[in-house]
Length: 292
Image (cartoon, rainbow, N blue to C red):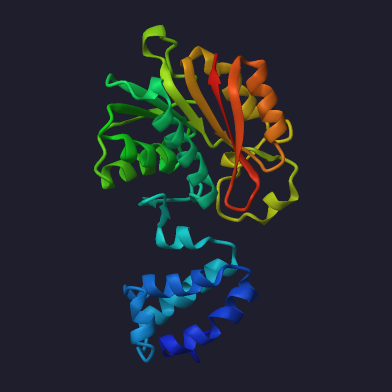
């Protein structure tokens, strides 16, 4: 698809299916990118098919298509990604929030709704380890802002934290604190300030996984880990009892084939009521447990 023969929205719509197949990307990437370039709502694609792209819009559209061909995801082209009920700014230092991670948010909110430790009227604390764009921490802070919850979001990357802080500001949240830290490293062990909940979507892809070679844009360090992808999860689970209240919740996202290993880590480190929740594709994705 080149600037020489595209002139209207109708032509782009006609060619979107073939183009998405040749680029190996979802078809909505093509139409969403078009809407971003012309700054219109989705309805415009149905009501104004005859709209002619200007030369500058056409140049921007084709430049984006070329970047998709190079492996750059749509969210990095537009600079944002929807997650839960909010929009998040993303950059090359943050992972793009994925729908399956919403399962982690769902599970935590369900636990809070049904658990006495999370429903007292006093101040309550939640820790998000490896926050990235802040999508988990901010989504939870947004849902819990009327319930006296204070959220602490940790990441080693200063660039990721910068994006997360901006996302918290954009969503008008003041109940999130951001700390630069390698997991728990910069967090004090304080018996009086333990967390009621710890959540994390850590790197969990095996370092030797051949699929990592296909990624051209997202930070590999936020995706892969040693020990068949389990090293960071193991560290988080082993240290959690030092920072979590008795009866508190630990919830971790992991690979589709790691549930048994992760549940075993929970058992070995003093957790009970352990369960694994499936993602929207039916794969094991989030394991939760309460500290005895």
